[in-house]
Amino acid sequence: MKGRYVILSLIFLVLGFLISYSYQLTKDKIQNRTLTSEQWDKEYETRALLINKEEANKNLQEELFEKQEEVKKIEESLKSEKQVYYNLVEDVEKYRMYIGELPIKGKGIQIKLEDTSYIPEGENVNNYIVHESHIFKVINELYISGADAISINGQRLDRKSYIYCNGPVITVDGRQFPAPFIISAIGDPSVLIPAMNIAGGVIDQLTYENIVVTVEEKEEVRMEPLLQEQKLTS
Image (cartoon, rainbow, N blue to C red; front, top):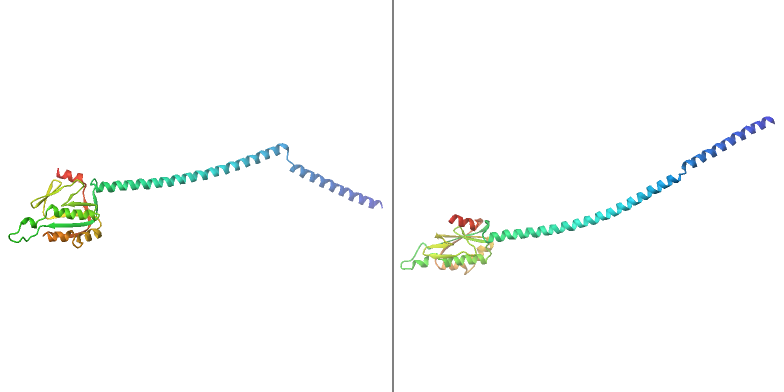
């Protein structure tokens, strides 16, 4: 009996030790997990700072999107203005070429006017040579048909050009040229040539008036600026 009590005592002793040890271990873990007030304050401060940063980042992101939209609108505006300025410069260059301040080149045609080689005996010679009226007919038809620039024997014409006849010689802006007279025009050949060859048109009229007319399409016609031509003649 005493032996049993001893064994039971030992069992209870070991069991009590285990219970006590388990309780102490659980208590230590709970204490380790428990935060102090300072730690709570620091953690709260950190969380609040993080929230503020997230809010600030959100606001900055929204501001960035707004700035990007503004930049996009400015770029579109500049692109539109650039196109407008480009068109203006292009128009200015085109008009400067038209008035003769710049050289010009392009497709076009060449018309040669020649005096008749055969003059019947007893006829008036003046009825068989090229006069300024013949040249005016050609020039007017070319301008009406959309010619961009016209020259006579290399002398480029402008809005102030003058042409007059002095016997077999034609004077263009103070320069004299003998026959044959080469009238060059820059423009669409598919428009200019049919305009010259229309039935009852300029070529038919010139032929009827004893003028020899030759029309030729040119892949490229070049004309120098009027100022350069004036320097060459001065």
